[in-house]
Length: 84
Image (cartoon, rainbow, N blue to C red; front, side, top):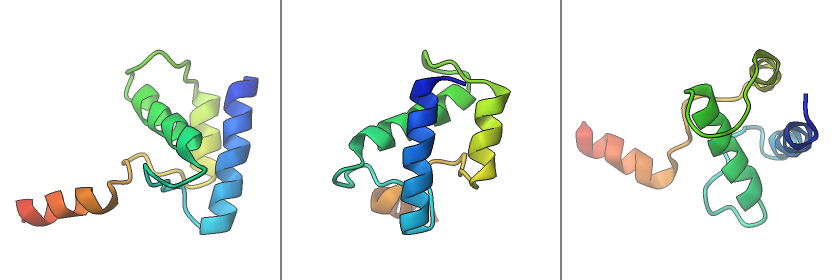
């Protein structure tokens, strides 16, 4: 893979071991860069953005139970509630 991906994967694995999930809130202090990278991975998986995205990368993310549906935070849950 590449160093950039590996570095962020390491950060994501560390985050998951600390918080038991990969759902990084947008404004989580100290995790802004990781949040942007996770968003980029969501976009790359959909074929959007400029990031290189390979099957190996997706396999590594799947191995740590990465959620392909983006975390909505409190605002997203309000949208779901309003739609209901």
